[in-house]
Image 1 (cartoon, rainbow, N blue to C red):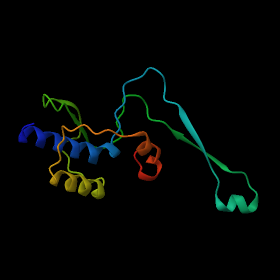
Image 2: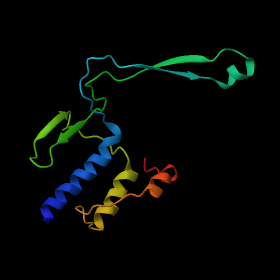
Image 3: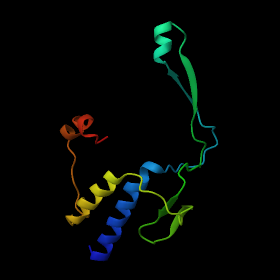
Image 4: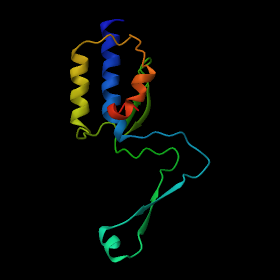
Length: 131
């Protein structure tokens, strides 16, 4: 793999890791999004015996990106597939993730290497947040 291609993949990995938690892209659906209801019980309600407060949280409608800024680029062609306010400056979503990616990429890993994840590693994923 050439240095330029490795750098491109590393950059795309970095961008995807930093922006993935802040954006959500869904295919357009004909079904309305389900409404999620949660029950929240306040401390005062538990002490006084009052009923719990029921709050409704709306699910996102199909085809909507809630992020303020987003960009999706095809890594092979460089074509912009989706763009939403991509030219605007925005604060870093997660400095920890950015620094983790930076430290990882500074080690110059072999990005074309296949890695096998065993069943034992998946079973321990609850502690390592692999899932």
